[in-house]
Image 1 (spheres, rainbow, N blue to C red):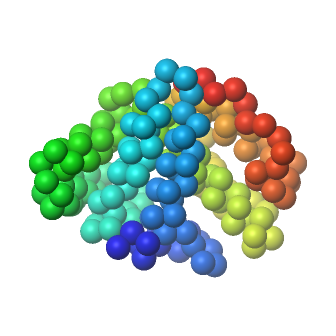
Image 2: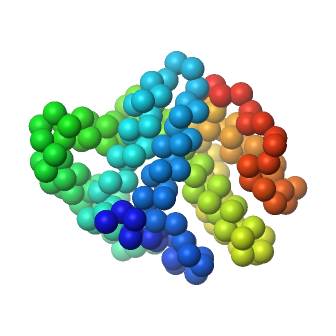
Length: 183
């Protein structure tokens, strides 16, 4: 399922061996472990793992697909509800509640995880630029997130990545430290 659904944006841009939806959700879950104080780390991890679950059924729909945000949401909601019926009431209800919180951006955890979603995308774009030795060829992904980070931590991490990219740092995970983690 997820491990086979490649991320549409990377496929569209001709990235060699693009990540899957599963790769994306796993990496977000790992970043969620760094949630700043005051946030429920476990909720952030679970939300990161659930936020794109519906894509194994509906596919990785992007703004470039001919579908409205409302249609995308409706299709993903139907897919989530269907999957949640397969795992039983308690767990299914929890999965659906996490997905709905993320979609509606209700909690502070949802806002942080949404920032992680955008951050993972631009981190991945930067890595692909480095791997393919094509600086700035994925600029549109950076442009699409400009001004859209809402948490202090998300803003700081994006600023840190921008500085690395500006200086053409080869290793995204160099021995530099991440900025303070504040929501």
